[in-house]
Image 1 (spheres, one colour):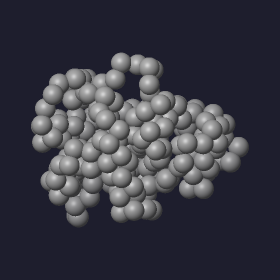
Image 2: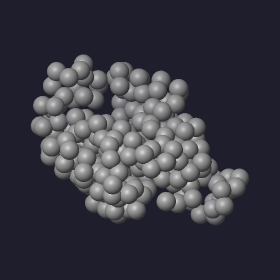
Image 3: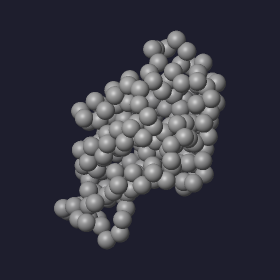
Image 4: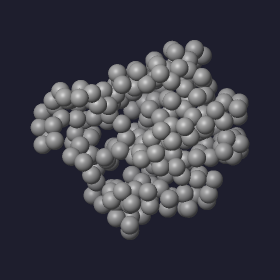
Length: 232
């Protein structure tokens, strides 16, 4: 684990089951004495949760949607994620920037180059993580962005995800999209994984829940961040 804590994000289309396992992973880290910050996107701060409500409930064009999501992310990074990492905590986040490239990029068809520019602006370290000795934040000599040390992608066919969600709750503006939208989102995740294969671990989310959990646990154990005996 690096000096600035550990950052793991959970990704996947709605219904993939990621939220089920993020709590289990948090418990596994806590059982080994780690301090865990459990958060989500869009959201994680008072302002970001307000923006989340707008994004999920109000009709808007893809650029407005993307800008609101990145605005929420900036507040989240500055107020929650970077401080927690600087304290040496484990940050587990239900979605992060990969979701934006999958949903707004592939799903909505928004310009990926614009999203990449926004990602560099919004997630710029700018000294937020401090120096290697853990002292006061400093301005980095090279441009860096805050991103997960590991992203666990729960890969599930959109048709299966739709069956899981059917009747479970009132769908929001994203969950109510047609299955073709989620096919594009799933393809966006696949493309993102190919571009970031060392960071993004793909897990077959169509398996039984306990099998999926073992895959999640093994992925983290192989990184050396948990003991093999960790339990949910």
